[in-house]
Length: 248
Image 1 (spheres, rainbow, N blue to C red):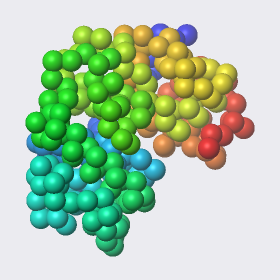
Image 2 (image 1 turned 90 degrees about the vertical axis):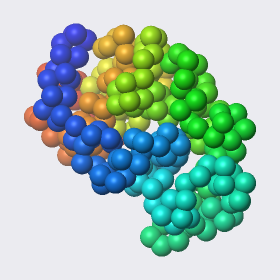
Image 3 (image 1 turned 180 degrees about the vertical axis):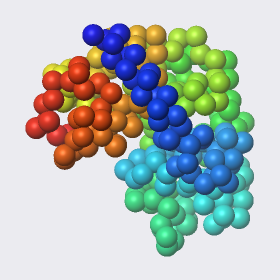
C-alpha cells in the first residue's frame, strides 16, 4: 500500500509542478525570490518568520524588512537595533507579521548568533554537516522548532541542492494540513508527532521530508477542514475517509 501511495504522490507532484514551491512557483514576487535565493541570511529570516501566517507573507518579510530599515547588514542589525525597535519596524502598517513582538525577538537573537558563531553568514550553518546535525544547529535559533528545522533542511536539499547523505533524518513537517490528511486517511491513529513521522517513513523511508510539499498542497487545496474534495485527491483509494476528524 505504501509504495502505491508514494507512486500516486509522485504523479500528483508532476501535476502541480512548482505551484507551491517558495523559490520556483508563483507564491512570491520575483524580487522576493531573488533576495531569498541570493542571501542566506534572508533565507534564515524567512524560515524563522514562517509561523502563524501564510507562507507567502512570511517569506516576503526579509526583503520588506530591508526596505524599511534601508539595509540588510546582519552585523548592523545585531549591534544597532534592539528588540523594541525591531518590533516597531515590523508593526508599521502594513504589518509584516501577525506576532511582531515575538518575531522581533527571534530576529535580533538570530542576528547575534550569526555574528558571533557563524561569521555573519547563515550559509556557514549548513556547511560541512549532516541532516541530523543541521537540524540541531537550526534549532539553536529562537523561533525554530523541529518542525521549522525539518522544513529548512527540505528546502536546502530540494531547492538549493545541498548534499546531505542522511536524508532519512529529515522528517515530514508536522503541519496542520499534513496531520489532518494522515488522520483522515488512517495512516496513523493519533495526532502525535512521532506517529506522523513514523507513518511518513513507511511511505518513503529514504527521505520522509520529501513528502511535505505534496501532502501540504493536498491539505491546502483538497483535504480542507470542511467540505474536502475527496474525488480530486491522489490518494483517495487508500484513504479511510475519516472526514469527521478535524485538527486545530
